Length: 308
Ligand SMILES: [Zn+2]
Image (cartoon, rainbow, N blue to C red; front, side, top):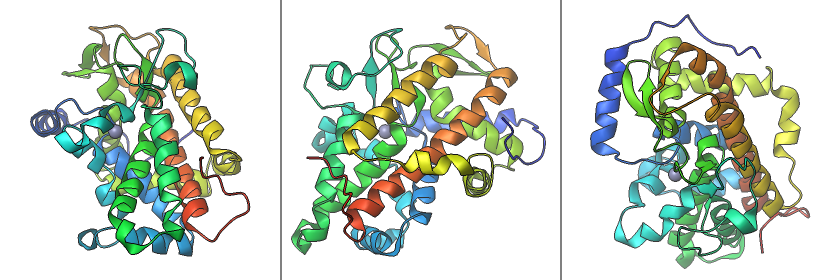
């Protein structure tokens, strides 16, 4: 697979180390695409919105973001440890049985206490359903609808991050400590953030917008353009969401966990072979988020996919 990229890499270790430091202080135990990954997913989605859905999203966003959904796509990660939102913490991921490499909703979609539907697949269905009432709702529901939009947008990113549908015993790679080039990291974080930041630093002059533009070029007129229709294809929301989760655990087994053990050092080989996967998952998350928002917030379609 050939991906359009900028200049050859020239890694800036001190820059990465600085970012990791900042990340450790301000974002402990983040279990999500990094803010960069979520922002790209949401920017891609917002650019694909049809006029009606675009208008609804603008109405739902608080004024201070000036209509930019991506500015709040990481919000669910910022509040998940607040008392009020603690219940949302299990909604960011799915733990599947070790080595099973598949996803079964009934078996896997629950929180650590066994409460059903408390996983990222269940959350996407729940918030899609909530948001589908916006078209017929009244203005006093606006606050809840805003939260539903932000949760849905965030969780569509999370479900596409392969290691968010990982093995139970290693917490989606969080307990697999290793080195990313020369600094300490873990396998989950490599997929959340390290690959994205290394790509940005090495190929795009640290400009995430350029990385995002390359991702978009790949599906508008590049190597994924013929895949776009199949990415969007969805007759029934719950089976589509289950498919997204199944794709992730599949990729986690095939590319995430493969040939990786605690204590390893991951560098060029791992980075170069996994970056195309990360870019494609960000693209798919954005395209599919737009598909859902266009259907539930746009003009009424006969093929509405709102979950029941
Ligand atoms: Zn998350």
